[in-house]
Length: 123
Image (tube, rainbow, N blue to C red; front, side, top):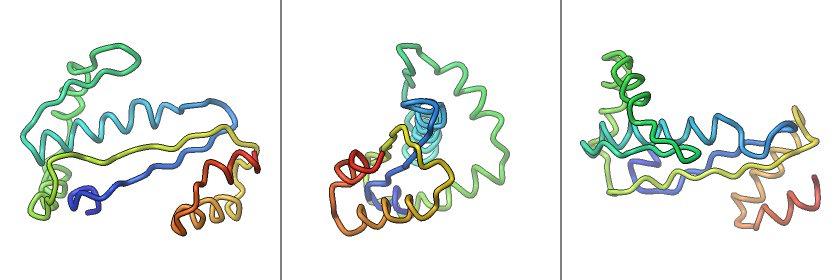
């Protein structure tokens, strides 16, 4: 709903293993591709790590079942934007599975603080 309304949506992903997890570099691009196609009737060209992934994303899109597409289409009537503000914040962390730590991180963002400073101090 927030994406349809034109609000910025932030996906946080912290991992002890990788700077940018696959869920971000591929997953968010897939979400943008599918939403652009369904909501805006616009097939964007997904470039991931310098590679054109349009063929793969078309296959994945065609595998979406009718129920899923219908669910996504439902939100189209609320569109108040022509651009998706879907961004990510990723960091390496030593706080894997520390729910209290991530609760504090999200609360800092909600309060308008620069969470990057908070995270840098608490890696």
